[in-house]
Image (tube, rainbow, N blue to C red; front, side, top):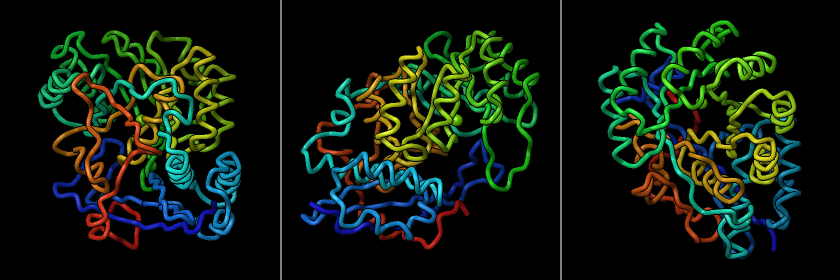
Length: 374
Ligand SMILES: [Mg+2]
């Protein structure tokens, strides 16, 4: 059994109205997606997505002709490529999808069979008025979500807190509230410096008054000392790691006690093989493992399988902020968008691999030579 072909295509979904992502200074008029398909010599195809696979072309020959089921070997080669070139972890997702089809098993079973479902939190992505945000928060609670994530980062911090106060008033204790400070990394064109410790501490103390469950990326991703100090100075859990590129950095974060909540995205960092091990290390340290999933439905599904099948989580990110960010936009490449069940949870199916099918007509109509948001 051999890998016969690896095909990478880029796509852009036009966004009208644009999506004003809270962490981006430029409104997004297009939603890019890179799709990787790995086909074996018996005609099965695995799919992956979540990163642009910059620089992969020069290394494709390291996979073609190999047995697709040698997942540890593929993960090791991809880890080397992430050092020499770019992050190409979507290929690893595609290989797991293909291996699952060959074995006739869903990925949640392949990574450990701990479970197939995980509760979801509604992850908002925009800065809207207090009134609008509170109304959507009530809708989220009514739909069964156990938790909701708000975005800070408005020009005035007092406006962020006014939104948080309005949401807490509107939902009471029906929802756990999470706040993403988005200080860990920046878009390429955004040179605004991250918060320093004193700013983050001041915000943390105020968040505690609203019984916020976790504070996400309060400091730059490399400020290990600041995160550890902040963690010791507040009752609010400290979350982070979504943009951390190297798997060893997560173990350093663990050793130094930097975070309560670890958020590696399987489509961005490490892949299934390495994150499966990390998930157990995080759980063994008494911390939470609940990946970042902001991207498209293929990455979301991969993170669902990984999380549900290994150590589980109190809730997993579900990007959802209608009408700006809908499941139809997020999952445009799939034949059916991923939705939460009536109890606000995400269930992996028993279909082999990821259990997804792509919408070929939409992919053909959205083909693009570029991978950008503009
Ligand atoms: Mg985040």
